[in-house]
Amino acid sequence: SAVISQKPSRDICQRGTSLTIQCQVDSQVTMMFWYRQQPGQSLTLIATANQGSEATYESGFVIDKFPISRPNLTFSTLTVSNMSPEDSSIYLCSVAVGQGYEQYFGPGTRLTVT
Amino acid sequence: GNSVTQMEGPVTLSEEAFLTINCTYTATGYPSLFWYVQYPGEGLQLLLKATKADDKGSNKGFEATYRKETTSFHLEKGSVQVSDSAVYFCALSATNTGNQFYFGTGTSLTVIP
Image (cartoon, rainbow over all chains, first blue to last red; front, side, top):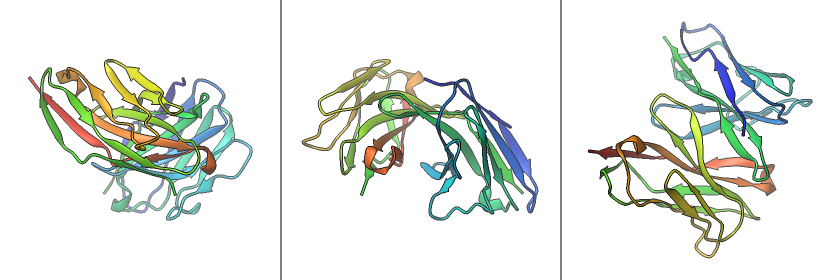
């Protein structure tokens, strides 16, 4: 298993500003993911961030809007840039470990954009 | 392609009732299957998993069996408690897509005393 922490746990931001979310893992992992979960919805994968390579973005998500850093095997950041109210959501990071590549999730960052 | 179809909610049960949440999947290759639980205001927690056909995952009184013939992974619990109130997500991890996860839409469960 893995224990994951995220900062901040929640924030209220103004339209047009940017927020950087941090994800810290208690062990070294190769595969890390960033998801968005809109209220009452399932998870949508934003990007896969493997250490040593550029992040891979899913359809509908672009690097200019959601830049990701992965400087080492225990840490990653996701920035939500030029925010609008439509970006209000929960942002979750996860890591894949184990034989079945199960994913373990952080507690999430609850973002409200006004 | 890969996908997960999950029973629509919300589900409301009385304490000690039997729970079934249906989950079926479509996948090429040999996926691993998972159930996650999300309590109010929290992230997702891995509840149980099964990595091959006929495997049974179990945890905290919950069970699910990986049925390849029916492409299903239904979640069951014999006697639910108020503390089981949460949203439950079925998911698969497919080796043919770099172990990317595919989540169901989630099923909200409320257990009333």
